[in-house]
Length: 394
Image: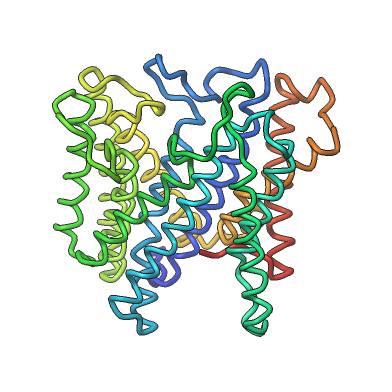
């Protein structure tokens, strides 16, 4: 029996599923990091070690997915009639939103006990401000009401910035750049890659050249052959991961339009195996495998893993038609930013109420199960909010 590929428009479903799986695992690894006595392979590998833990492949997979979905999002806006100015504005606004959230999240890691508000209260209000500013407000809501909520969120955000104190109680400091955090890194990577795609479109050769150029910067940086760091892209690790997703997106679109499923499986399989092999090959010469240091071996191996996992998701969702297998986690793929921010509400509320997990849930297998339960609970909440038309959109 022959099985035809679904039309290209259906591909969004497989990307949503891949994104949902990745977000589920991201929430899990973020929570399980505080659990004691878990197998070492689950957690992040330490900065001074050469290796790859399960947690080390989750964020790069998300960056890869950003690249997968980016061409579709831009083409959709072009189809709606957006001109170049509209597209550039769209890219800049999305990037800025992610950078702002990432900036505040990073500074929260340095929050001082000298601040007026307790950390949990400040974080709860910060997350509320994000929702007020970037909520996907109903189209039938009056503009006056919508902008009243948005402006209230902006005022609250500015107030929290003014109240913020970081550093030690002896020498407190205000908000300042440290690193950009998960959302900020996504923001910079999206800005660069979306701009690249805006001008290269689906020109496969040029998209591949762009990916190779960014990967070369990453390799040179970690081979100590780069005399300077390029602003915005840094060592180009995050941009390389996102560009890799873009390459696969362009390839997939090209092969789906030709209904060449045999070549599709061959290209995806070889791409995944080749990038993993290249990562292992350059591992000894470019500071090993390290997520913390974003080495080329880590970039390439995680790219290869992401390609192979995406290939499996395509097969299950687009070929076998099994999206219902992932129905329970669907909101993590459609309300992803909402899903990501809900834990900040959850943990803040638990801290304010002084509720702690029973001791047996903070260690070993019970702790791992608890972290999975938290991840599923967060996704269920996101689904509940989605049904209530409450979701973030940038």
